[in-house]
Image 1 (cartoon, rainbow, N blue to C red):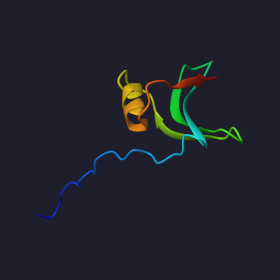
Image 2 (spheres, one colour; image 1 turned 135 degrees about the vertical axis):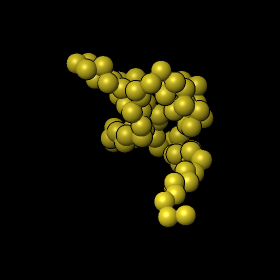
Image 3 (tube, rainbow, N blue to C red; image 1 turned 180 degrees about the horizontal axis):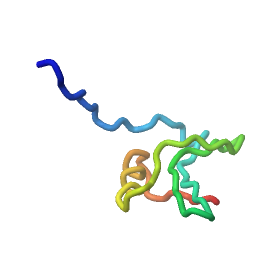
Image 4 (cartoon, helix red, strand yellow; image 1 turned 30 degrees about the vertical axis):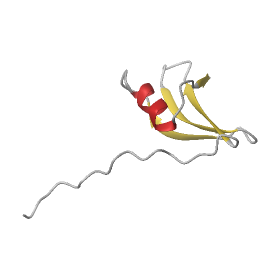
Length: 74
C-alpha cells in the first residue's frame, strides 16, 4: 500500500500540576474567540491548548483536564 493514513493516537490528558497551573478559558471581547489553556498561578502566563470552535469543545477540554469548572478571563 503506497498511500496510507497516519494513525491518530488517543487524546492524551495534558500533564499539569494543579498547585502550579489552573485551567482557564481566554475570551476575546472583540471577536468572541475562546481559547482553552492553562494559566500559571505565580507568573500569570497563559499557555494555549486548544481553540474552542464547536459547541462540544468546552466539554472535551474539561474532560481532558479532569475538572468540572473552568474560569474565564478577558
